[in-house]
Image 1 (cartoon, helix red, strand yellow):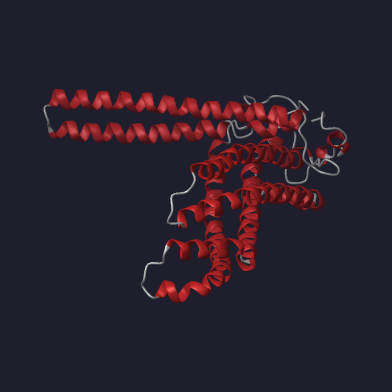
Image 2: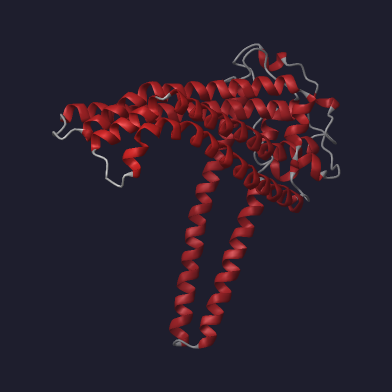
Length: 346
């Protein structure tokens, strides 16, 4: 679609575009969320199956009074070192597929049949966009370092010329204030101008990173306000999530530690064997495992919701720019088969 529009910016639709799209296609949204939770559950399961034995082995070696066999130490450490990059890569791949699936729902109202995750054209273009955004962030850090380095040199020169005069200190303070505020404002504006790039890339099925400037034209202030509100929502949600996780810890972890409470409350430092036994009991206790599952599930639900809201702002800007107006998009009724038949498709 190449037709564009300058529809009025709808703050509520932008902030809650994710939920509007979920309400429009609840079955598809549930499918994406379910498979995202399953995928991350598999990753956590692999980490527990292969990582816990190595951790327990290290704890047992730490609890013994004899020097451990170096080969055992290297074997346990090697398992953890080998597992780390696998977990990181798998997590990034799942995150990419999930991002593409949600953006298809929010920009084209499409959900792939069966398993909604793909490694096709959409994901390839989205990966390129994300890599470009990472490169821009790195360039921003470099530019910031050079900019503030120049400010340091400038203020040092003023101090040297003024020989410690009061006006020099006031001027330096003003320069730093203007520099910091100006840099932060510029960084925020640049980030917001690129906000619609991933969504446009998925909606139009082409690399559209720099087309985001047209999609965000004249609505930068509204977008900044929208993201600020979402940050406040995230803070409130994090507080609720923390309380849920604390309840899970108190109900699960504390129960697993109950046999050791007498020793812990006696004021006597436990020996390494007691520490090892306590940690092993916590890691293998059904109550602790259930508590861990509750914590992970709550974290995933919160992560899916917040990331959906965050990406939804860019998706709204893309749809608004690309012919959409309002939460109900009659032009987004493309059949799901366009992404559901083969992984090679977008």
